[in-house]
Image (cartoon, rainbow over all chains, first blue to last red; front, side):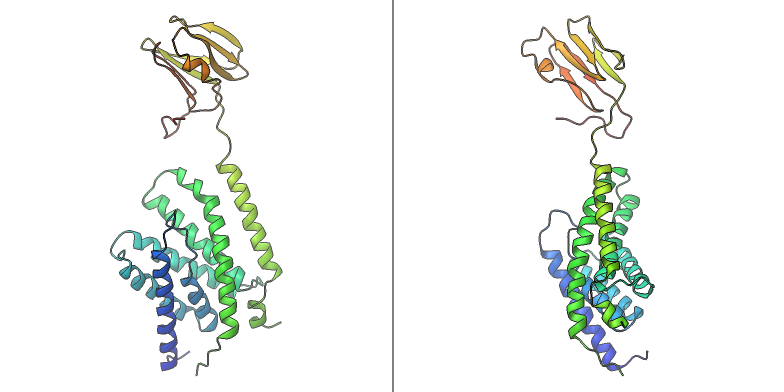
Length: 168
Length: 123
């Protein structure tokens, strides 16, 4: 698809919304740092199904860079978690979206949330906490992933039904 | 059913995915939060020396400093002691790895060892 002005507008609007949701979620206090719904993923998944993979990648990278810039984590090692897990989660969602498995957006969103959290767990094990005790978090992480995937999936379906893009 | 309709309605595959994740949650919880690991010997440290006691044979014996130790069904406890508060007696049975009884007046420590990166878990 060729890059039109309209597409640039849509990409920037979606990026801004993803960044805003990312920031709002990082302000909310939570008992564990990964206990978030991942609302930014709503717009990443939406643009993945509405336009294409590369547009979704652009929104993802914008979310990671601008979002972490504003939350003050951009030049810390923690940004690695955000970057790697966001991109892997996007790849997994793309794979399930394109696959023959008849998953709806709820299912695709759950796979994205789970892969995001599990990537962070594995990264945490290899980069920072070199003890297998960290995998005691595994059931909690699966539960959070399931819940947040359901919530974002339902939101994506609502938006997908109501937003019709007219791209030339 | 076209792709657009498929994407916006809950499908059987979604249900299967959710069930798989729930099973994984339950399975991994059972694995992660299971009961402590049983061991087959206890270590008793007193008078500056350390002694391994097998838990496979039920018996009652007395240490040199007067502490009576009972081994039964793979568990170990202090049956009697001459210390004033008898905290070691009240502690009860040691069953799982990392369980510890300490008797300060008699300078005695009894624990069930396990090779791990954790030294002790206090209770």
